[in-house]
Amino acid sequence: MLLVTAHVDEAEHAAEMLCDLGLDAVAVPALELAPGGGVDMELLGERYRTLTRLSDAAAPPEIVAASIAALMQQVPPTAGLSARFRVLRPGDRVNRDELAAWLTDGPGRWCTSSKT
Image (cartoon, rainbow, N blue to C red):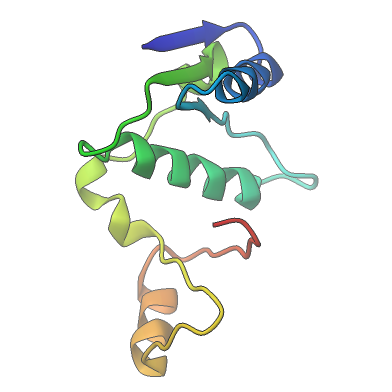
């Protein structure tokens, strides 16, 4: 089910309220410009996490809340979505050369986040 709201904060609030009621709901973040221009990388990370969750046919959320702005923004094809980001958690072991190649030859931008 898709719940469309007029504003971004309303979609986030609706998803939180639905989760509090025991429903599996997610909010689709709308991209905004960061101070100084450019895309807010934290929001971009949240949007990719949400899109990954939505593309999981085995466990899709019951309800998707999205603002009109979020729905009007383009999304990458789901086929290439996983190649665009990489999640590294404390304790993960990665090949240094492979990671360096991914960072330089891959999407070209990266961000850090404490969220999983």
